[in-house]
Amino acid sequence: MPYRVTYRGQSYTFADLATLLAKASPFRSGDVLAGIAADSAVERAVAQSVLADVALTDFIEHPLIAPESDEVSRYLLESHRPEAFATVAHLTVGGLRDHLLDEATGSVELSALAWGLTPEMVAAVSKLMRNQDLIAVARKCHVVTSFRNTLGLPGHFATRIQPNHPTDDPRGILASTVDGLSLGAGDAVIGVNPAGDGPEPVIAVSHLLAELIERYRIPTQSCVLAHVRHTLTAIEAGAPVDLVFQSIGGSEALNRGFGIDIALLDEAYAAGLSLERGTVGQNVMYFETGQGSALSAGAHHGIDQQTMEARTYGLARRYEPLLVNSVVGFIGPEYLYDGKQIIRAGLEDHFCGKLLGLPMGVDVCHTNHAEADSDDMDTLLTLLGVAGVNYVMGVPGTDDVMLGYQSTSFHDAVYLREVLDLRPAPEFEVWLESMGVMQGGRLTPDSSQPLLEGHRELAP
Image (tube, rainbow, N blue to C red; front, side, top):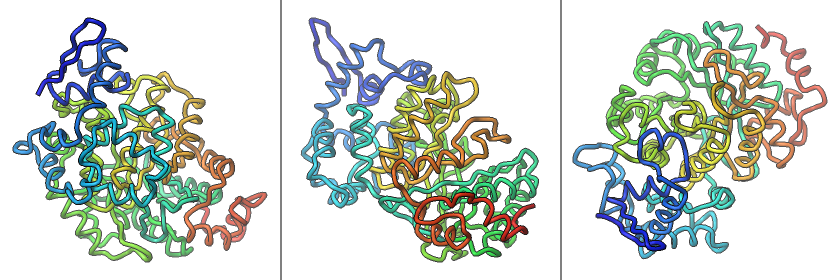
C-alpha cells in the first residue's frame, strides 16, 4: 500500500510501510549501507510527517514480513493481545506518541499496554520522538524480574560482571570477578563470553562460578554466553547452569544464521526451568541483540535496522527473560558510525524493549574503529541511567581483553549509582553490606579490603 504526499510542490511516494519506516528513521550508516535510508533531511521529515498519520491498525493488517514465510512474524501476530490493544486501537502513530508522553499515562497503564503493541508500532513511534521523549517514556516503564535477586525495581540499577579471558583461564576469570564484587558489581549476572567453542567451556566455567556463588552465598546468577546447543549439552551433562543464553534476531532467516529457531529456544527455555536453580524467581533466559545484525546476515528483508531490532524484542518476550541486552555499538561503524548514532540507537533500543515489557540492559560500548570515544559513552550511560535502564556491563578498565572492544567499567557503575542515587538489587546490597563492601547504598572508603582481606580465598 503506497503512501503519497506533496510537500512544497514536490511529490513523495513511499511504496509500502517498510519503506516509510526506513525513510522516517533517524540517520544511521546501516540504513545507508542497505540502500533504504532517506535521501535527504527533507525526505526524512516528510516521511516522519506521513508516518505520524498512519493508523496503528495498519501494522496488524500489513505485516512487514509475510507470516507465511517467517515464523517470527507468525509469532508476533499470534501473540498480539487485542484486549490490551483496545485502549489505543483508534490512534495513529502520532496519537500513540501523545498518549505515551501524557502525564496521565503512568507505569500501570504502560505495563497493561505492552502486549497490545506490536514491535513495529513501537519502532514507528520511536521514530517520531526526540531523545528526551525516549527517556521520559522509558523511565515510566518498570520491568521487574528475578532469579536469585530482584532486578528492575524503581530506584535500583544493576551491573553484569563481564570477566572474559582470552584463554578462559580460571584465575583470570576469578580475578576480574573479585574486582567487580569489590566495587559492588555483579547483581545482574556474572556472565562470561567463552573464548573456546563447544560445551566444554560451558561446563568448566559454570562449575567455577557456581562454586564461587555457593561458597560465599552470593545472591546473584551466572551465565556462560555460549550457543544454546552447547548449553543444552552442558545441562545434559549435569553442569550447574543458572541462565540460558542466546543471541536472537527479528526474522527467521537471521535466527537460522544463528543456528536456532523457535523450537530450539522453546527446548532451551524448558531445560532452564527444569533445573529450578532460582531462589526468588525463575526467569532463566538471557538474550543479546543489536542493531545491524539482520543486515550483516542479509536477513533484514529490506527493513530498517531499528525496526528489525524491535522485532527481536517481540520474540524475546515469549520467554520471560531475566535479562535482555542490546550490544548497541558492538557490531561496528558500518551500522552505527559515530557516537551520535550510538547514543540515539541505545536510547531507542532501551525505549522499545521497555515499552514491549522487557527487562532491558544496554552494553554502552563501541569498537575501536568507530568514530566514538569515552565521552560519548559517558553521555549514553548517564542518559540511560536517567531513563531507568535495568543494568549495564562491568568490564575491568572498560577494555574487554577477549572480545577487543570498549565497554563500561565497574567504576562507571559506581558513578551512575552515586549521581542518580541508585541502589543495587536489594538482596545483593544486603550481601555487599555483610561483606563490608557497601554501607547505606555507597561503597565503604576502601571497599576492596574487607572482601579480599576477610576472604582471601576468593582471590586466585
